[in-house]
Image (cartoon, rainbow, N blue to C red; front, side):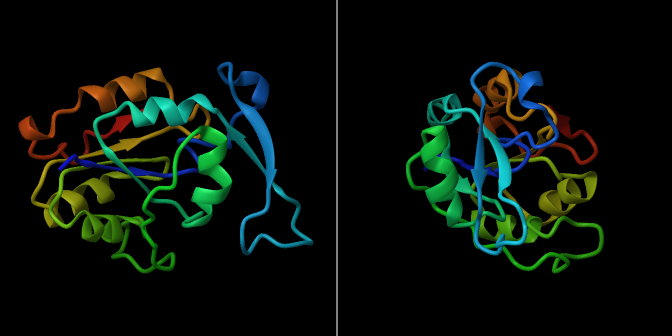
Length: 178
């Protein structure tokens, strides 16, 4: 069984802190309106690179959406980046995690159910590393992606090189950041 790769949208795939002009070649801007983002709110500007799907599918992982887009990632994001329909972690409400831990962290540890996993997200902190290491017995890698750059080649290289059989867990406080 392959390790899981938990994939966030905003930050890793949608570098929302970047201008389209500042991004590497291949990104296009999309106006999307996910559930709960109704008028009078304007549509969201989402920057996506259609090469990301192929790049992620080449990695030795089972891809799983770990995003507040939840199931809409399959209909709104996946087709634009070249990903097939993926499993989705249904996330709890914000503020449901222990103090200082990102609300996604306990849900992803529970979903992994002892399987090795990698998680790419722009909101990871040392508290998330500590929580995951203390509550998950298999190998794991939490990798913070800059929302100003998104998923870049060095991130993909790190994910391709990670060997869960040789890694108990990434040490808390030694977060990898893109």
